[in-house]
Image (tube, rainbow, N blue to C red):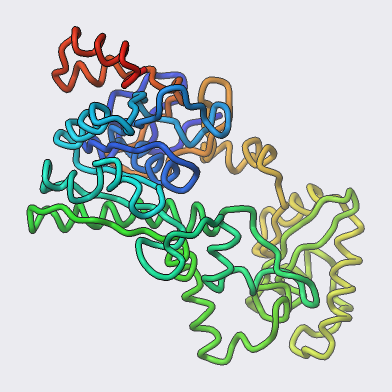
Length: 390
């Protein structure tokens, strides 16, 4: 894989804290998916993120890529000694991130009040599905539940069929982890003026709803009046859809504008197809496009469309995407210990991010981090024997 502009070359060891967030210190109370993703983004961009795991715990996904670019300590936060170690970490940090249900960290003695008392400049990031308050705050849920309540699930899918969920990209990652990272950075910017920390309440329902802003605008303007699968961007028009090629693979067509559609007509050979300007003929036009796409393989169509503005692209699997020439040229994916990872993004001209380091074993850096905090070696041994750390 080649090196993206503004990224440390693969195969080299990036300097510690490479990127625009170099020097930022983050404590992450280890959890699942959304909060780790938000912290991964911060770590990718240079923050020094220390994950706090429970002793004896295991990652939900072995070798989870979301754990890259971190140091890991194993501390039993259920003990007073463990909670005190976290508070000592907080004293030396800029940000703490947790992804538990409301009230959990308060009961552990490491909630916002306790942490801000030790470090008034701390940004305390809280990642939940339902938010810190409201009638559902204490309820369990997953991505599919949060995007359902946010109104982001109902519009997805084919006409006449049930809603189709986009794995867990909308709630966990787009409306969750990214929103958390943005909130943390906004709070850090505000801190530069006020000198004070604050709590960031990042809820996946809020974030997923935010992602639907454009859709709400289109509805308000009378441009999204159909049901699911009957509108411009959801498969309702034949020139913005996915079609099967001769090899059973798919191409994505998004020729919305007239000039781009003209290129698509030339590429597919649709000169005799019905006009796209008459919605009554769209079912017939869809059949023409489908029949044309069926005459060649996915990659043959991609080659034919490459130097045009036909807005036709091959639908790639995640594994194929890492090997696609465009992504290789841009180094959209980078090699991390023999595995293809999505590269840090966005890219910075003056303070580039480094190539990520692989996830480490849980607790691997416990002794190192505690020593950096000034904990004496004898005390580290004592805490280990007591099961407070591992």
